[in-house]
Length: 605
Image 1 (tube, rainbow, N blue to C red):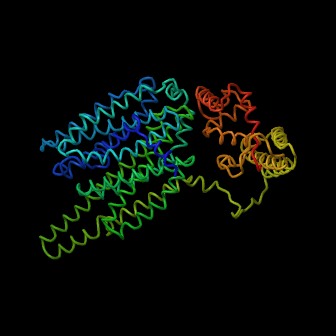
Image 2: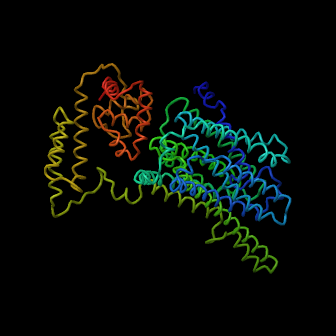
Image 3: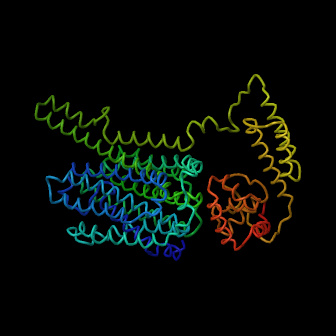
């Protein structure tokens, strides 16, 4: 491990410390219904339930409302003001402090405080996400992960302060501190970037494409959040135990953030959210399977471990939203509002659902007590109810396990593409029953296969594939017929370029070993020689996937308008990517880009 590089990533900055302090204060209030710095006598079941319900609804509603606001009122939401979120956040804490002294109005004040804290907390999340998205990818990602690590350190540092004064320091000292950090960093945001100038309603096609892309990852991570919320609500039924679970969760979050930074310090990371969910899946399902066997003590550790995974999921979600904003010129508040609204909404549904289940279990215990007072027969019925649980004669932990495994499995299926993927997939080992009546499309496919085989044997494959494509066009291949011909022609193009590279002499000015990441292009075969060369350029100069995509399209002679249409982005976004590409490659015009790409000769292809 490169310890020096890790320390550099963890070096405190205004952004990372400000974000970390905000997360630490959140963990002391709105994070999962735990108030470690408020009197235990104040944390009655009614107060905690109504506060959590109000905070959860307001939090999720603010995310979704922010996304809707950027759609309908883009000019008004372009300047996201800190005071607009600091006021409700401070008001929520003031109401909580008041509830400690006004016992008769504690439930009402806690409910109102939870609403304000939910609005303010969601608003601050929007502010930080907006900042990280506006920064360079490395800087924004580094501040985000380092801030998550510092949050745990600052949270544990709060225990060094006398509990009696901590509740007052939060609105009077800590809130102004991370609010000031947000103000200072917000002033450095370049509002001339396409993501901030974008008017969503003018690019409906682009935004629909983005939503169609993100909903599966959002639901997958949201399901993890739902199960995490259920588990946490059961683990913190006792406020004193809840404080312990909170500390375990923050410790696990620190370990996860530092581990992520340590890996990043040694090599480049390319993370897919859906793939991450598949990695979490066996770990989480195994954890839930052990729950009925190991009992309540294990539940606390499981809740903490799940919150560590949930924290990583939140970081990945924020990174992906920021990348979508940079790559597509998408308003960062819109994409984060939709993605976060789904994820946090499912988490809060899980937490409230678990709280209701906890209430049913408590109700069963009450029935058992009443039965004991009424006689032995009634006591036996009551005891069976308490032991058996609230539903189907099963213990509560078994119910949680069944529900969690079912939801995780369903979302794994949906994340893999659902029934559409199942019905569309083909495999070399599948059983094939050919139609008894042969139609014109089959004959067309046979002709395309013959042309593809012929093109694969020719030296100049791109030209051959083009001739085959032109021939298909001459015969009127369009609509669904083109869908048959298209993949065949692309396959011919790939085979031909592989044959071409085997025959090509090696030893060009630049080379990349066959074992590098340039050897594949997003997991698919290269289109042609230029695609291979661009992969080598990307590897050497550190271009992002979208920058490499734009650079290749530029090198192929596409106009800005055509590139924007192909990538579902605005023309301003394409120009911004072009500027960044030219800066990274130290070039000034298209011909220099073409010359640079042509100077690369990937090996072994």
